[in-house]
Length: 166
Image 1: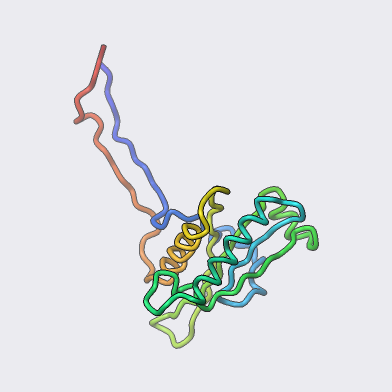
Image 2: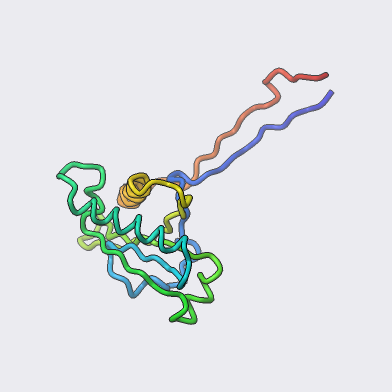
């Protein structure tokens, strides 16, 4: 007879990669409400993602009030070539394109806003530009949401489930 133990899974609440724990300060010189894309010359993944992000920013600028992309309206796209900076090359050259979003978050308890930096998980190359825009808008909305616990723990009691033995 085998005994099964409960399994525990943890995941990020928003499903997006974060750079909070390993922030090296590489984005500190960038203004708030900026999408920073680290690229290198001749990278077809970089070029495709830049085009999709540029389309997302353009679509947000034309979006009517209340649209899902409205939160991206004030964002600017900043493209950084890792071959022009040794620190960027060391950090990102092996994993381009990398996308970081800097968002100004209004702090309710203070009278000034703070800037939050989040990494946008690289979408698959065949993902539609509209879907990339929606994912980006979702990341921005979640970054602006009130702080809550960063992880959800789901525990299942596998020993209560019927076992199938052959």
